[in-house]
Length: 336
Image 1 (cartoon, rainbow, N blue to C red):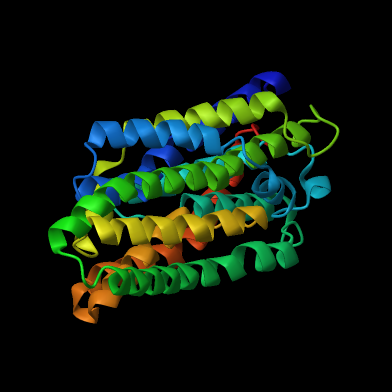
Image 2 (cartoon, rainbow, N blue to C red):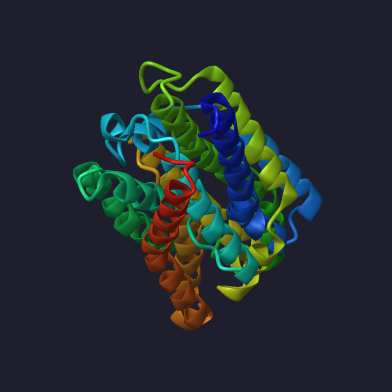
């Protein structure tokens, strides 16, 4: 049996790798529209997004507490050395697979699915907190894309009405400036919601290894997760940027501003409620909503449908992989 501190270090290291891949995978959430509309260069956009992801990670803890103590019963899984490791391996596998395929699936739900699968493999079907999962995962899973679509659609309709008497050149000039603000808002909200998820998983690992007495996020965990996500975002995810920025709907600066502003507002609202929603779901559906406000045929619905399939599959696929990972760790003596 490995020495507990060594295995814990491995778990924390892999969690930070997940956080990095989350930042790289979800960098498109903050920068796809601003890059596709040529408001900022890719390098400038990713550096800005990385810095603001770092800032956003320090602005709250509600989502971290949901991940750490609202998905599985901490008391039931306390002492399980391999649970968090298996959950992370399943989530990272799904992240990398969808990143390779250029599909903007949800890193958040991959992590949640991983936790559920590993917990069931360890403690049986009683280990997950189904009430909390329903209220803070499943309901937001269903509502946040709808809220994203409606907010993107309505905001775009409002903006179109406000600029109806302006020339296209003037509108583009104005919203190229405003889109820098909306992209910054989106990047900050992404750090606020997504970086907290890894904070929660590391805190759960510390608790299961009996290194902390209660589910409280240490400062060093906040700092490490913020840095990992910021660096991951700065590395970029260009295949997903292409999907988000071009394949769903051809964006102009006013469309990018509407999509980013609407998505960031939904994400910040969810973060305040402690709901670990998918920033990918939200920005994808705001882009679709913005496109639909112009005309339904402007949206490439085949691509949108492919995204929905990936969203539906994420939690069960990550759960299955994580359960298999836990059983493998148990067989090899690395988990109890």
